[in-house]
Image (tube, rainbow, N blue to C red; front, side, top):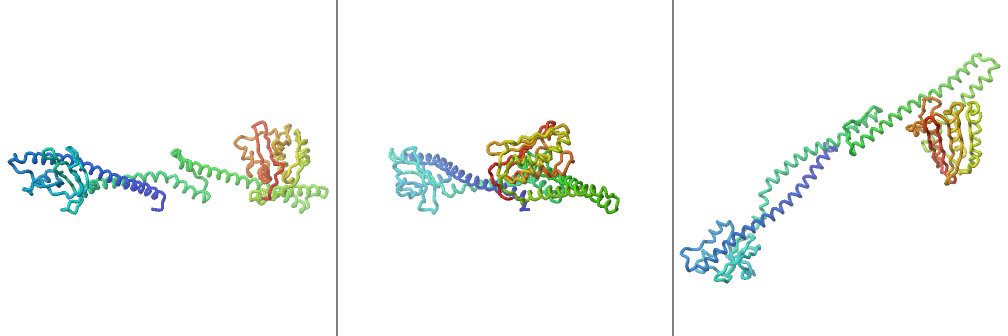
Length: 466
């Protein structure tokens, strides 16, 4: 339970809130202590003014009074504060009416003027506690004779925060409970897409690609983006799986056709059905089918090596003009037989550092693809131009063209636009070979107007073995 992301998110949220609550609580306590100290000082200031005024009147009218002064005990009961005095005794002959001496060494009460206060902390000799006191001057016939001090224990002021700990603790507990519930809901909302993706990943791992994790409720945040990308990956895997199944069926068909033909000819020869004058033609047919099988197997082997980066290329001087002429020579008869206009512009083809056999293989694959898709009466063009140290070999055709969405798919090893005309290995091998030679193979096409494949090769780059 605690190891789940949902639980960790919830406890992290609550822990952060608890930490913030404790910090806020400490700040509140400090502020409350300061507030209580200020309020206590203000209250003592108001009260000490009254007490100082009272003692001033008593001293000035002492001979006229018919009643005894108020005792310090009575003043304490009325003000809820201890009464002290700084200076000589007010009533030498009546000690019970004299406040206790504050015992504040060096306090200059004579410097106080009427209406002024002195706030300080002190420890009276009769107590072990520290007090906070407020002093006000007492005057007799205009002369300051001392100062009365109202004081409260400092511990009472500093510990006043304990009065609010109960409400703070209750509020903190309620807040934490509410935060935990809210955090659990938020964590559940956050982890639900991850749980869904995890379950879908398990199904994909078992080979079940029929999953869909994107719903109308999928959010637009980072988790929604992750869900969308995961679904895109699954869709791509489903597409690749479908293409691979089609590829296997096409390869099986390509293998079965020549094998069936070879088997039929061999059986006919073995049964003596083929006359002696037709024996040579039958053997020629078998030889042609064997060559077809050999080409298919070699293509599969080349593609496997290229994808495994185990294909070897050499670096040598390659005259592109002679190489392109060699590639074109093998297609001129096909062009005449299919009434296709085959144009070649390679007189300015440069010499490059590359692997001649592999360049020839690429160009041959491109020409074979162009002639396969060009209808009778169409046109195929082979050209070469040089720009910025790059030799660009182009093969153009007037075929049906390629849809914009399929421009990159044609290089997939299992792609076939109509599911016929070969296994779809030629263009895939051509692109892998182009990359192995340090170049690139690209295509431009318009539906109904044909396609142009461009092989770009560096003129002076030496390619390492792959």
